[in-house]
Amino acid sequence: MVEFKKIGELSNIELIDIFEARIDVFVVEQNCPYKEIDELDKICYHAFIKDNNKIAAYLRIIFKDDYAIIGRVITTKRNQGFGIQILKEAINFIKDNGYNHIEIEAQTYAIGFYQKCGFIPYGNKFMMDNIEHIKMKLDL
Image (cartoon, rainbow, N blue to C red; front, side):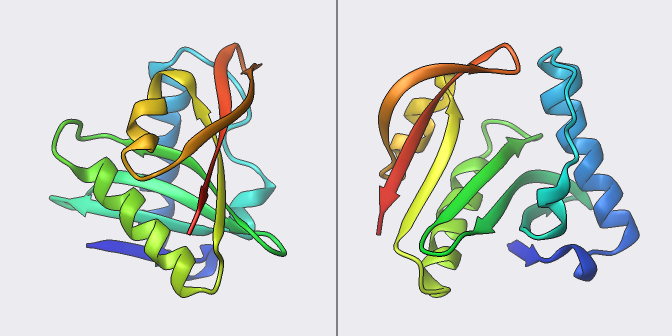
C-alpha cells in the first residue's frame, strides 16, 4: 500500500527512514555527493511503500500550477514490483487531484522503467550531478 503524506503528516521515524533511503541510493550507492534534502521536501507529497517496516519504494510529487512533477524515485527492495507499484499509484494520485500532465527528469538508464507507465522522453539528454538525465512527460 502506498502512503501519500505532506511533511507535517510524517512521523519523525518515517521522515528519517525516507531521508536515509534516499541518501543511501542517490548519494552513497551512486557515489554522487549533492544536496539530497532540499526546499521542495517541505512542499511536496512524500509517497512511500513500507515492507517489513522499512522503506521499500519512495517518490515525491510536486504540484505546479497546471502540471505535476515526480522526482526522487527509488526502490530499496529491487525486482519485487515496488517501483512500478508506487509509480502507477502516484500517477493515479496525481490524476485524482485534477492534474493531467506529469513531468520527470529521469536518469537515462531508467527510461524503459518510465516508459512502462506511458512516459515519453523529450528534449536532449543533459548532465545533472554527473549523471546523464532526460526529461520525460506523461499526458493523462
